[in-house]
Length: 297
Image (cartoon, rainbow, N blue to C red; front, side, top):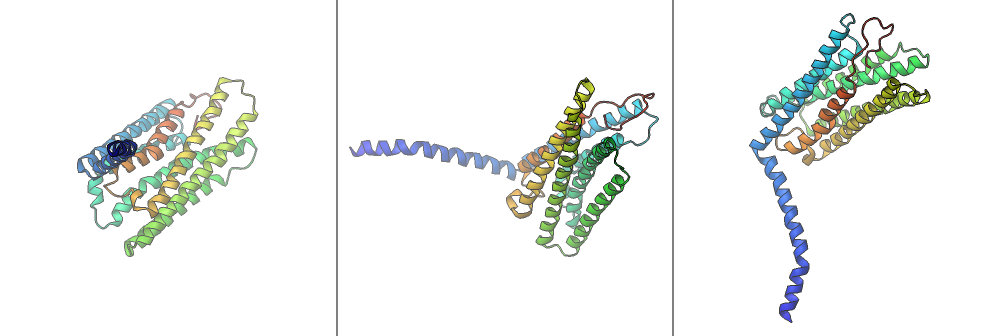
């Protein structure tokens, strides 16, 4: 009877023990990868390759546009692709030399090197919001004279505030300054997400009001809807993640021993969104002879 009771107790506890063992093994795997310099380098180099691929795609598209309409100057479409090439190219270089970047002195240089591509990414996609805002207001016969000055003012303000935070961090490197810097960028990301939701949503609803009888108009409606959804999601994820990054050491992205978290984060907020948007906006502008040219087709 005693033996039977022990057998019954062992049987009841076995599933729980197996689950605990599996959870422990899974946790050990995560920490083993994070603490391994070999795996850190592999993951960072994989990120570098992915960023390089996106950068090459962007510059190829830029060359194709230039060959298609060489008579136009630096249109919104060309600047957008050039900035994509620049942002992803710099990110690729940062991840190639990620270990060296972590050892740079003074420490403020590490923050600058890791933050500049994020600021440039914001500028790149804010340019897309500007383009959509211009289309929306032009279609409603509203003046767009103030849009470009507003775009430059907002970007200048973001860069000036970030530079001030870098200088304060350099002068007095306390943890609270790092938190403020990360929360500032979380706010910038939320602002970008709301910009896409506002103007992408407005443009999408405006296009819906027109009869969708042509293939081109239907594609434009899908394009705006897809890009709005992708960019709003990626900037919202960035905002949430930066909040965790600011207050939770386990979510710190600026260290070498969180390579898996880095891979997931940058894949979701930069690599995949950039790849999808470049694919959706791959259509070339019309050749010369068309009376009106919209920079992003």
